[in-house]
Image 1 (cartoon, protein in one colour):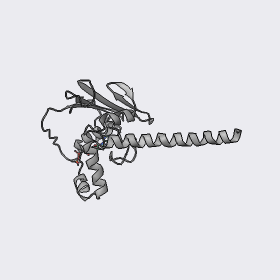
Image 2: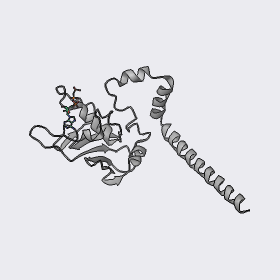
Image 3: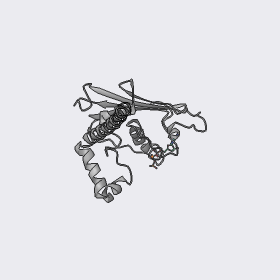
Image 4: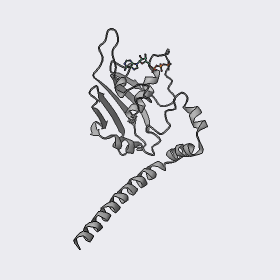
Length: 198
Ligand code: ATP
């Protein structure tokens, strides 16, 4: 799977609709300080479900919406799509996968997979173990290399587990344990009721 194109509209400095296309191989983005290079990686993180405004380099999530310049009015929403070439079928059966996220100033937020309204959970699950996803270490920001090197063994193990594809099973185990717990509680209530009426 490879990222073929990013479409952004109203996201940070991208007031106009932009289509950033990538070829296979290495792509370098160059430009002066503050010209918006990091906003491109921010856009990728954001579509993959980043929930932290701090990670997005803002104070609140709304800060990712284009907030205007001297001669342009602010936008009401930000929208980003990632167009992924899925020839190797890593992400299901379709040849191409389009993941989109939209945020309105009102706080309303929407996710889409192939233009169908989806939940954040669907996007997270789609990318689990694919080597992509917001926690998959495919975007290494300034300072993160140091962080990984300095990580405690337990933290580093998490990184290796994600890369090795163990996380999916850990998540499923956690969900099953939660359901088991709920069932036990229900059972306890049933026992109480049986005792009360007998
Ligand atoms: P550096 O080389 O310094 O890391 P960069 O090229 O990576 O810079 P970015 O940090 O991606 O640049 O871009 C920062 C620019 O984006 C700033 O000019 C900032 O004003 C602009 N920007 C960020 N958020 C918004 C927003 N909500 N609306 C308009 N512009 C924004």
